[in-house]
Length: 419
Image (cartoon, rainbow, N blue to C red; front, side, top):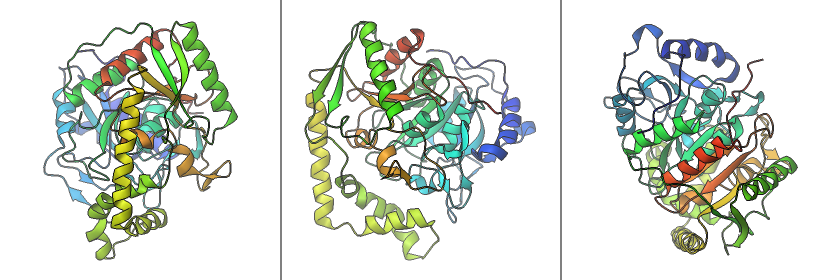
């Protein structure tokens, strides 16, 4: 198994840095005491400080889901936490998120907004915003998030770090509060490809070999890419990345994938499971923030006929991707069409921020595919991020590709300045 590359900073030092930075970026809902940490000196993550999304049970700690009312005193850790700790990882704290993971900004009305370490007036993305901010600020080398529509990849992109949306089912979901259990995933964010790979292998209990990466056939999906509400800087960086991939010997061509673009059937497809997760809370009249309450109102308005339409759409999407991967090795898009979402503003370039930030990520979850967010070297602060999608079960090939592109200098991590 690959070894994590984090060096020098101890969990205690990481906690002290996180406590200081939290005043600026509000990445953590809870931090451990430096004097009360377990000593873990063996395993592939021996002594590595890790941040954990406050949606995942950790024995002896309170799971809040970023909500006003949910308080679960965990008597047992989620399987993914047990795996990380058995591998030597040290959980230093729990990270902030979009309320109940149902959104993309992490502007939480109960805990305050998670702020982007590159510019605290902007969003860290969501729903795993605290995990993205913690890694992006250089506070931890590895953080854990969940991804149901982009909730690992969006904050990884906006905060300038690496993020892996795993193949559905690769990492166990027990002990994780559900949003949509049939497409939910748990995945790592990290400051290097080696750390991302190590975290994935521990979380997924996957010790398979990394495949060799030679000449790759990339497809840029159309009309999905061309129709995106894309900022000029993102488009320019993406075009430059495509040219660099070609110079490195890879093939990159447009590929037609009919009917693959975001539409309202995304909500139809997830409605019944979201209803199941929140019905009791709503019937009790418990308090939600305005945005999540309004989103839940819309979800509870979805009819049985519309839900069936959503399920049919999911099947179609999966078939379209299966066809696409018969002709290419990977699919390539930006991770997000725009890199800046101002806190408190709903629009990005005249389009609602949820539509913009989830444009390239949400469909991937419905297709059950793995995808990786990679920060492009030298493209801004934070750097523009590209998303590479693979066929189902293709997590290790994606990690192998990311490591090669990092070695070649096309992608790379730089922590946000604390100035």
